[in-house]
Length: 119
Image (tube, rainbow, N blue to C red):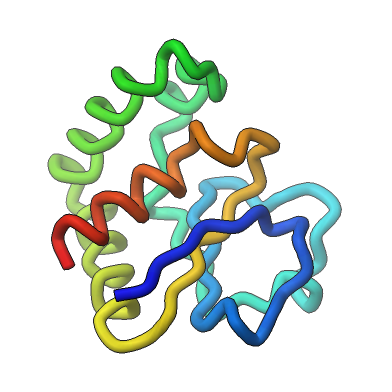
């Protein structure tokens, strides 16, 4: 299983494999052509309330990770979206795309970690 995360504003690469946008909101300034997505799985994004509370603040990340994991487990659409990611990751390289400037403390990295644990 090979899963990476990448800002959607970075150029697409053939090494990305399957490119899935995991944000709930379409990123500003990115055309659908430039994004070169295989799929946009907005269902796996954190809730608006959780995203706004977290605000990519490092000191909130541990709690964010716990709360976001609970959202993924307890919400039917999020569970189905996560299962779709698992299916993609089974036999091909998967790149989870996100728009946040923060490249370490974000939901895409939480998703990647969870996918690797369950892989």
